[in-house]
Image (cartoon, rainbow, N blue to C red):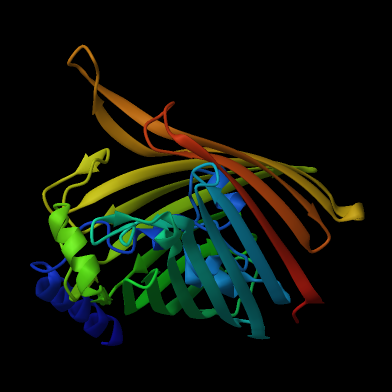
Length: 367
């Protein structure tokens, strides 16, 4: 009955917000976190099993093996035009229960403010200042997994995020918001295969915007043909990411493939699969690794594709574009360093981003 009630709440939330929601609300929340998943085409709904599960699927955090895991990612977004940072912590309270906390920041710094450049017909460059446009998210996570009895058992995990969103554009605008995510995973005992679903913003996430401009700034906006924004409420509709993975191992070699499908409910987008109500973006990723158990060493290479889009070519025909990504990772004992190179925008023309992430386990494996 609890799950039925949650489903009805989601449907009710969708119905109430359908008329006032817009596309691309809180898009900074969906950029991604962790170079491993970036290198694999932003797949992670099923295969995630470490501290970065707080982003990809909170249910995966229940598979954390260390008592404490800490992760940090820095993304030189759009060739360092913007910066994206993610700090996450997972604490195992018992064998099958894990708590997590994460902080996310996406920001563009050093933006020129020229609203006061001209005052009373006089140009004064000393009045030109700079400001930052920064987006923050604070997430608390809980995850739990069933206790296996036999090695033939299937393991089931579930979890959720409670998130607080704060957005700030210099001294001109601030927004606060609140939302909830829920995740589910199922896999075999040895981790050879698994399936997962991550439901974000299941009750609809809102942002309450407040704008502050001086009378002089409002006059400049009006005279230059710009719209003066008003205080408003912005709603982000639910989105779902579902997928599965399969792992092949032989001796010291390991190969993992994962496929995900992200479904948005805010109307038609330029995706491979779309209707007037929903859009779906398929993602594919692969990871190959060599493990040396005696030295607790592992080397991994990754590749993936995502963001399939249709575009009109110069000859008038339609073509299909996609975003490739690649990456590498090194794991020594409980320390893992990952790097990924991923593109954003039209294939072959977009700016590429360098993503670096680090994770470390503390206090050994939990018992």
